[in-house]
Image 1: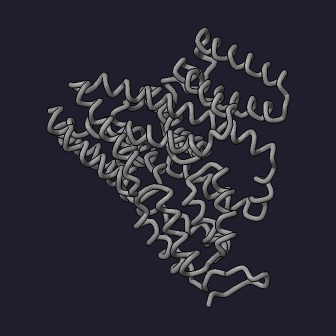
Image 2: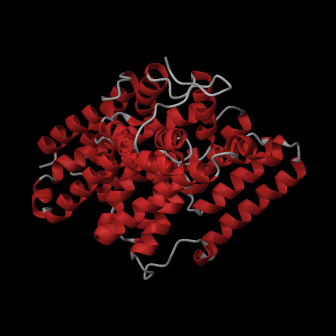
Image 3: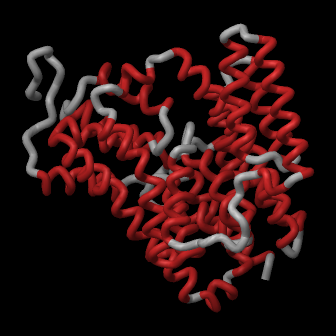
Length: 399
């Protein structure tokens, strides 16, 4: 029988700090299949079997974490670790969950750079994988959008974000406009919302006339550990609805500055999709390509910091703060804008991939086959199988 508090809520069993770390390290070793599979695994073991927390409390906690940025499964681990052993327990649980994926991705990143001549031999396979990754991202856009775009206004925000991004609007302008405009519309402040929309259009126009108005760092700016940490930190704050929503910002701040190319970027997303880790671990690969070991570790620290901070610093206030309806409206508008930005980024990545492949029809065929597979086959292993098959097809067709 599980131990309970005075209010009848279950308590985690008594564990040493080392045992707690190892418990969540095991979760990290088995964290295949993305956040849905990872959360289901945690629920099965710690809610259904071991009763660390009641099912109703777990559901409320998950609802709160879904509104906040950051990898939800990782945030769950931090929160549950805190229930067991306080803030140090939360830190150990989060580190345990992320460590396997971090070490694997560091090894992959090192091999990718160290054995570059071998990677050249496998260029066709990587092109096949890159074509399939676009399909996986497209499916993610649909899945994320189906949860976020709950009314016509949100669809409008997403569509405008899509068009504005393709037109070259700054990432931050689109996010600010989406969150502000939707909050005003839901508050029935239609005139002010219209003025905000006009200001948004003016800013987009100015971004074309005065490119320096956008907050993208100049090409000659530092790409040291501090810069990589900042890029990772911003990406961590932008993971609304899943790590795919961090892709546009990270791509803008790396590929957009000429620090790596789209092929390398897509390879990193592909690697992250097949190892046991939150998908946002692709940032470790990006950091390594741009800044070596220091860049990889700095960017990883930045991208995971919000996931630790929200639970560890705001543990007692989390549910109360997120219950504010005004915050819900702003976050919903931002999330809808992110859906449009990710969709536009998917189109841009697809077009860039078509420019690199020897045969556009073959790449399109890989994309269509991959999209159909991940759309129909709901298994947690579907993306990994799609990427593996795409690698074989690409190796055969793009040599």
